Length: 358
Image (cartoon, rainbow, N blue to C red; front, side, top):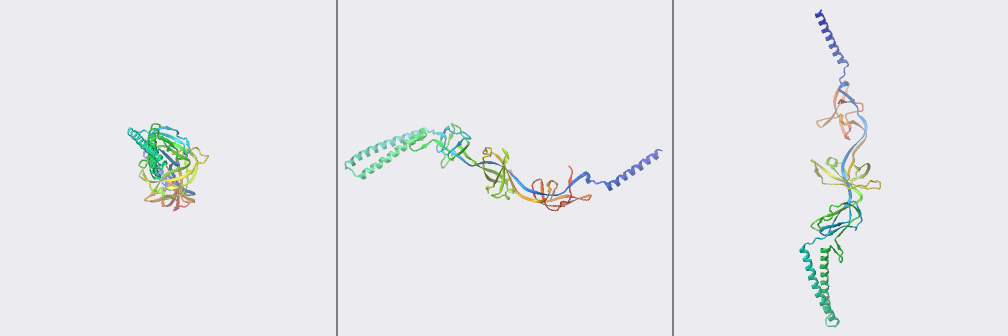
């Protein structure tokens, strides 16, 4: 009895296995469990590039002093509006003992020379009025007198500038005035700080920075691969991070011919100018901004999600479903927006592209 039961069980098991094999061959489709399919579609596509940068006033002027000394008084604060000619700071001269001594000696010597010249002139003037000397002799003495007076006045002015910082006779002042109208955006020095004068051999110390805030420049850097597709006059859209809902339509004004190396990649600076309209929130120098450029665009073209492509040996392929089998097929692609890509050759809207389940 046991032998018959065991034999029966073995026969049933064999029949079950054989039936399962036959069913799998006829009805089981492994693709139903391993992957789904998608098809190409018709769509518009744009190749856009985003450029990060900052905005700065189009005109910024550094205010510098023509005399060296110490900042004695600041008349403005950051954010103040100033007009050309307004007082901004007063610089106090700090002469050395040697300078004071030399200036005093020059004044004394010039005064002695002037006093002698004045006496000689007054004496010769009386002689000329008495017809004792000729007019030419008087003119010669008068010239020496005028020169001596001029040297004395110059020595006095130099002493006044050195000691007081101001000479009323010449208009030379230690008051630093605004060269242009605008907004004070930077005051790098405080009262008591040292100031170096601006001259032919020194750029001088900056006392303040004045900017005209009606026009701004966007400055951003692009890599060399995108640069070849750009040109001046190309439209771009700028959005400020502080005002994400405000879009500014401008054009590229300048592309710098010289690049800088950043993180192993050569990048080139571009500039675009825009006017600050009345409906703007107050724009500040240095605001972070993003510029969006459309490099290429296509309308009503065959597209496929880029994630379904297979890249191998500098070529592009897709897995097509043909009945119950899949085949790898070469496709030619066009522009991409980072999500979908243009299909130039190799697919139609009726093709089924294999999608591996994640």
